[in-house]
Length: 101
Image (cartoon, rainbow, N blue to C red):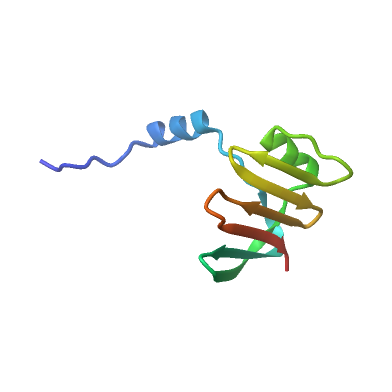
């Protein structure tokens, strides 16, 4: 008798529909450089994809874009964005930057 049951595909699909996750990154062409700074150390990597537009991300966050830029605090996270560059600063002063490579 196993202790852990594997999830059924129906349950996983339903859970994903309820969460309605949104991503700032669009799959496809392009390269992005992702930098995470924490406790004075930085981790950099690149990935395939592109950032969604400032308007799309403003809609996801429920904020207003002014002059093609976003500067807002959402759930305690400082968000700054302009075309091709997104920066998130968390309460514990960790930062994440995503920009075109």
